[in-house]
Image (tube, rainbow, N blue to C red; front, side, top):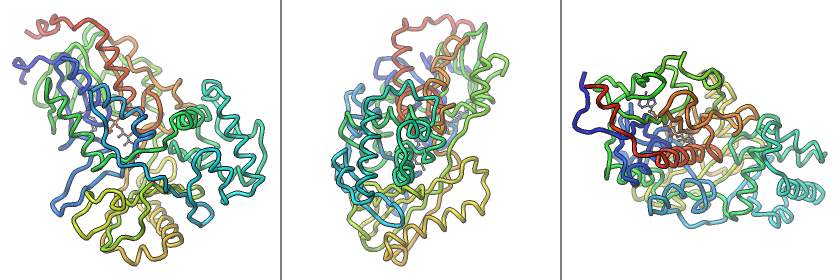
Length: 448
Ligand SMILES: Cc1cc2nc3c(=O)[nH]c(=O)nc-3n(C[C@H](O)[C@H](O)[C@H](O)COP(=O)(O)OP(=O)(O)OC[C@H]3O[C@@H](n4cnc5c(N)ncnc54)[C@H](O)[C@@H]3O)c2cc1C
């Protein structure tokens, strides 16, 4: 076993997704030495993206960033002295509701004017937005959106429309999603005045920038799986892989919490964290990328399903860098049922449902498809935003009882939803680590 003598990291980061790469870049930017360990062959985790030999930009599900330049991902970039290069906002978003494609209403005025609901339902929806605006999310994390709605409202049309609000944070079931999480998100959107931003060139550009910042003061080791987090006297002292031991006073575990069970003596992990990790509920999805030889539509913004949980984007309408010349790409996703267990017949049913929605709203699309690529994401969002998994209930970023161990990623107490939790938890951990004195080198001696 090699003991890494030449390069002594201040922190070892396990996992090179949004969270691990953001934390590593922030620490490196501040002058700390970091080692990122990634078991797979590329950085990016669930947001990985690469250009294939035919010239297509392959994304593991197209990734958007909520609130664009005012959002959490861009905050990481700003701290690095950068900005994410977002495509211009096109304001032509669509909703699929009751078998039809509708303009996605923008802001309260948009909802007042939208023909997708009766005038009475629009007024109820506006009253619901007004109530959301006045409500403190902290009072509602422990209740569902349906509970919140039912305290003041009764309208069948609006109730049928509630999945849209849940879908904005990827939990379309109003009886399941935490009201506090929806309220928190909608308040942030109303204040920011922007919806989502699409990074030019997909997620590849995000990871290139983060890698560049890490290269300044650290190393990224691909194909190197962390096997054990070494702990002595309730203090982290390093990480062991199949190739080496990396002594370090700080370890950031930047993968989904359930995976920590393999790396630690369970008796050391606080019971609350261990239980949370064991019972955590994630979401799953089926994504299909469709290639055509001609453009199908000029819609640049995203499309969201209200009554069927689909989402889509015609990437090449807004960014021609996704495909080789003369080819057009769109990416469609559908959520798989909660607790999806890999059953192929469930995937086939979801595919059929997705294609039936596509045929209804874009009848000329599927006959024009020349190729399609299917991907089942068994874990899409690591943490479904139910009341039990809402922000106050997620485990803290600093591991109680084990000095120097941090948890980051989309399963812990960051802000926002989906990938934003990863970016936000990375910033919180970096702030905490950087506010401590530069770690002493005592740990290194312990290995001599
Ligand atoms: C299809 C799809 C679409 C999505 N769309 C969006 C979107 O539009 N917007 C959004 O905000 N979010 C979206 N998400 C969610 C988003 O991808 C995730 O929340 C985010 O990527 C999680 O990042 P992370 O760094 O927390 O974890 P991960 O990306 O899971 O990274 C963890 C990394 O750790 C590595 N690892 C695990 N164990 C070890 C070990 N022992 N040693 C070394 N390495 C290890 C893994 O290989 C992985 O690379 C989507 C997800 C999917 C699947």
